[in-house]
Length: 499
Ligand SMILES: [Zn+2]
Image (cartoon, rainbow, N blue to C red; front, side):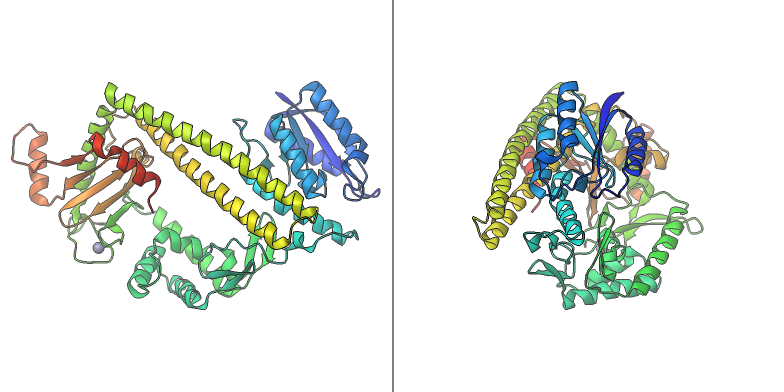
């Protein structure tokens, strides 16, 4: 069991540190850590500087001397009320591979593999500004008003549908708000997210393309009833629907989910099979008239596909690919791709840490009043957007590598006839299935970055396929496979940069 220390701080002499210590001891057990020492200060971290905090410094000496890698604190404001000191301390600790566990947010500054938790870094800024706000209410004078902007409703990221960003605040975009209200309306009339998405795609053509997932994300986000949530904080935001409408919508969604999960037939391709018209292909089974097929949910005219045929064809192909993945040359090619991806990830990481240092400098200059707020903001958003881009690229590369690993380690040669098992077998490798008049095109993730097309079946094909399985030769249209080296690189590029 790894060793840890607890650091607590109470801001006035009346406050009791026992409660904090008790909670942190409990938390250490959850984390599987053994507490070997407790340090406690009872001075204000804002009024006095870091150096005046005797036990804090003793704690740092102690962890360095005894090679302790874990510090437990109840919240970030217990480290310091000053942004710069908090950030410096966290950075120092990260460099020394010391993990700080923050109980209130249930967060650790380092990931299990020792890498820095970027989410924590991003949150340090906002959390510290909240700590500063706290200082203000305690009667301390604060230097700048900008730190509490998040609490005033500012610092909106600008990415939520139907909200524009104006001077950092979320502002309702009335034209799009109409669409949001329509969604809630339809939901309360008993329509599911998929049907709502199809309706919107039909009737609001100049808008974005909706999917049931994107509709779901809007009808469950409390931002739309005016509650912007950040950790356990609720910051007021302009509401697009009333609280009553939102809450009733949640009840509807829960009921629908219960209904759907009780459905009798498993759809192994649910959520990734689409018609060429972009609508979902839905599974239709009716035992009475022996219907067993996939069809376009928007009834655009594309013919339906026999469900049993499609499942069995895709199953055959996956087994073919699994066998192919055992081929030496194929394996070498994919192992190479992993290395290229890993190198790119490393380069991106170096650039990210460079950008963070630049961002820190930028902040120092601003707090030293050497640059204007506008300059500070401009640089900050520039650094942040590059960091975000690189991080996104890295997570894509990581995802691609994971998929390649899945492919290479894939011991599945035989995909199950049990649809529930089959579904879980294909879930990690499926990108999507697109059905058009002639073909079903199956895109696989990562390892199998090629795609293949299946001649769409009808009863005759199904019959021939059936015969073929029993060793009888029948004329059958050959399946087309696109996976030669010449376009593999291109397909990888497309995968990594879809836009
Ligand atoms: Zn269609």
